[in-house]
Image (cartoon, rainbow, N blue to C red):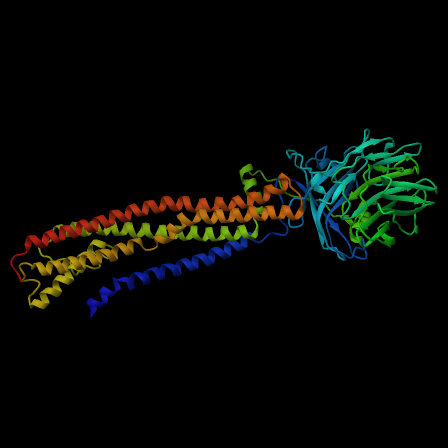
Length: 617
């Protein structure tokens, strides 16, 4: 019974138990690894975005009733950041402000921005930042502003500061020439005959003094308002006058006019059918005072007038917004009449009807007395002297998305499993080789076949000994069936030797299985690692282009982080597969040598038995 039990333990069930024990150890290692990864992946709320930037400041947004009073959520809002002596240390930044960076509250995602003005002598700066989201009715949203890095390149992206619906933005801070459009559409003014450099609400603005002073915006495909229309500007009239036009887009058949009549603002839309829609003239501009004026037209809905962030008038709009075949004129009518006299600043045109929350955010965020934005105390930190490679690796880690972490997590587990298998196999093969050498030395000196049969503990790690033991047990079993003593036998019959061959070959097969146990894990890492990495890459690139399609923006700054995250999966797959390939090839070579030694020993053992066999039957 003991002999049969020993044979079973050396068979498939024994190998299965060995695999099970190894898997249990691996499971414990994997659980520990997952906990460790979780600790590293959880973002630190107080983390420093980049150690090369020495200072940072939190910019807080308050939309509660005590602040800007915005009830709805707004997204992708270009907000004005005003810096001055009271809230910012200009000597801490570069002279041109090119080291400024704006980052989301999680300290991971850089935000698009551009500088309208940065004057360290006067200590005044005006920067426009695209804020992804501002929640209504609260004060929980904020962003970080980083500065203090003399080696930082300019990070501005004027076109990326605005969403796809923003078709024209004129800061009017130009010192000469025609006003320029800050959006990616480049709808720069074709002509301008007013006066620039006039102090206004947001830096400098433009002044129209009548006498034919106007601004012309050439008709372009991007200036398409059939899906909606928004015009906003800061305006200051000198006195109450007759019917003047801020904006006139009129081809004689269709027209969009935003004007003021006796200090009362109105909007008029005329379609080709002769139907004209005019808003009630209830919004009154106070002479010599700055006001934020906005007009929205939503097709098949209504035209709405806003003054200083609040809705003042509206009228139902039936049909589409007109699309006149003419240039847009600012400061007069298309024929040069209805001239406007006064100052304007920050003119914006959108191809959609902006919401009331959006308009109020513009008013509260741009005005000098706005309640939307507040600036926290400056914080110091950073100072890292890390290499560029380490810095870029940290940037890549911050950009990896959840799907990328899932793929990388699986690859990390496969990598650790391969390391565990490699370590166990190296220990096993080295011990087996050492015990094989000891057994071979003893085997060469024996005179009797069964001399080493009871030496299990001396050669416990030797596959050769286990093959020898299996063969000897088969021969002893044959002798017992013949009623012979193992000490008195003089040889073995051909039938006995055939049984012996079957027993040692069977044991050799079991030993080969034991030596190869777990190699499937390394083979999976070699073959599956690159494909898992490729899966993560394709998945990540697909998500990147899907987000581009959703946002409507296409630029290198938007694409690069997503592609870097995707390629990180391929890198992780190769990092797992390449070492596993070399390690697997090394182990396969050792296992082949061990199997060759077993086969050579079997041949020697059979030859030794055949030489000592007579005519026994």
